[in-house]
Amino acid sequence: MRSILRPASLAVALFVTALPLRAQRSSFDSDADWLDSCRSGSWNNGDDRGRACEVRQVPVRLSGRALEIDGRQNGSIRVRGWEGDSVRVTARLQANANSDDDARNLLKEVRIVADGRTVRAEGPSGWRNHDGWSASYVVWVPRRFDLSLEAMNGALGVDGVSGRLDLRTTNGSVALVDVGGDVHARTQNGSLNVQLAGSAWEGSGLDAETQNGSVRVAVPDNFAAQLETGTVNGSIHTDFPITVQGRISKRLTLPLNGGGKTIRALTTNGTVRISRR
Image (cartoon, rainbow, N blue to C red; front, top):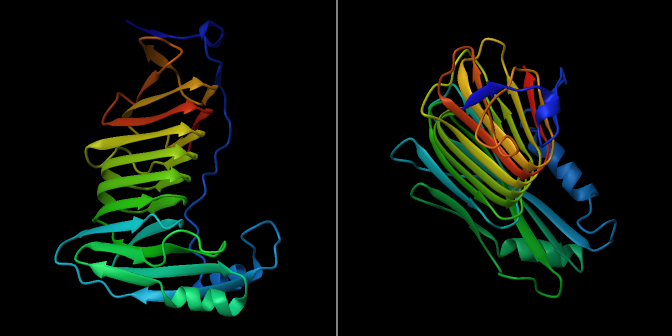
């Protein structure tokens, strides 16, 4: 049974408001800026241990329009679509050690491997005497492209790409801006930010979820979709009329502009904000 709800009737706090949402677009700072920031930063709250930072261009030769990045070495992955047909992958490496020389030597042991459609980093495993390294990626692909992205302790972001997209991270945020296709995204500990574009979803739909983190979705006024969202422990803020199905403390359904493809964005522990874009 479906019904239009009044805020006071909800077991979980619900607010129909005009809260502004300025979801951040993926930040593509230049390699030079990143190097400056890396060299002046600190991994461990201001410690003075040695550090090394390096940028490497990764040659990739793909036979199709699909790319998999294994980023499970404690780094972020950010992908943006462009009008070209080529793929550009940049690896940004950091190392932490007792001295700068030790950190530079540690990075010499790190290899970025492009094997078929997969890009991954290989290097010393574990931490040796509190020394460690990480690899993050900045990627440019054609706007219609398939992606599989996985991180362990790092954020994932995709901007302006439509295709079969699979994003998974354990500790890190997920940002999806102007994407389409068959999109699946999961994070255990991190926020979920979605910016929709156009008047309808192009493709099968979106299925995104975080266990511990907020959900933010920005929707154009004329966007037609079946928007499903919910939180177990948290409040819900929305600019749109609310229709619910089932237990109102679990999930809300918003048929926007007559409905359309399913856009699902859920959290277990966190606040949900649905805003007009």
